Length: 421
Image 1 (tube, one colour):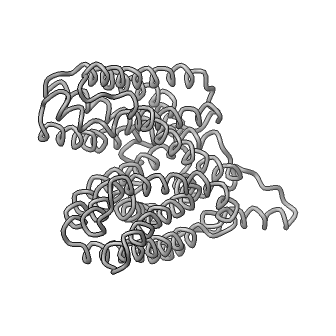
Image 2 (cartoon, one colour):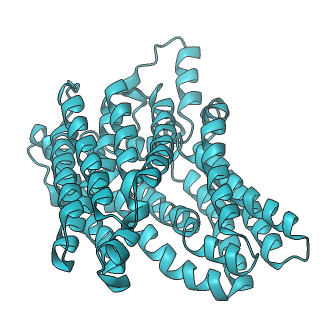
Image 3 (cartoon, one colour):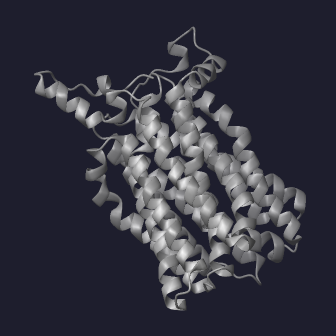
């Protein structure tokens, strides 16, 4: 598990190391223009949407570790070639390889966490994963920003070469992992990849969770660097330095609050934790509304805007030990990889649609923008409570279910706590 967490941190470090500077690199340093730079960002999303359905099946058939190693090598090749690319065609092909590799890392690592944890330790394992991901993104972005020089293509080549080296280092680290045996598709002769997708779509609780996940990522993550930042600058008059402070407040809240809220979250129904996050984010949008539509001072508007990002961070800290373990508990034995990939696909769709919808609204339709996403946050509360009706006691409140087993004189077996849909 420690090696897996190192993998999470290093993969996030590599992502934060280069992605914030892709637009500048392609448009200005390589002189390929804003159109090509925009296409590069679109290629990242499209590549993820293409490979994730196949990644789920591969994880189920081959196990998460071989798939992760292949993804890391693909991402390393993409990163290195991107640093050397000088034409639009080579940049786009390299971006596709890097985007595809990075997209597959997430469900593969999540499935490894599922296979290496029990129901008792899974929430803490996913909370640690989220903590390290944010730490890796922040550190990677900070170091990368000090290395790049927009007047020197060589500095960006060095940046992408270091990212490729990080991915290859991760291959060496994770190649030493000995995964515990978990059922694969070959262990169940009658099951096929198509049957796995049919079974997933027939699982109403998982379908509801995917709908909920789309709204979560659309209304929060899909707005961070697009609609919400545009709204802050245009409606609230937030400076770029204040916007950076708001993003730092979000990361700081996650780092500080992650393990403080973990014990609270572990003792609560998962559906109610998700519902409460919707209420917290609704308050965050009210604060954003005050920042841009209120009549307070510039200082009060800035404080309210920073508070918006901090409240989003608190909600994220509550979700990380809740949603990912729930996906694992809904997955039938041997199909955790497919379920993780399906949820990652939903996340990627939301992250693609969110900026496209929120960006123009945040920049020009200030009041409708705030009201729309306030309603989306309240919708999270509604969907969370509705999901609770589909979950079994073990799926919704695994700690309570295990406590009842012990109280009745039995022994809580980790494998028995893995809920079936």
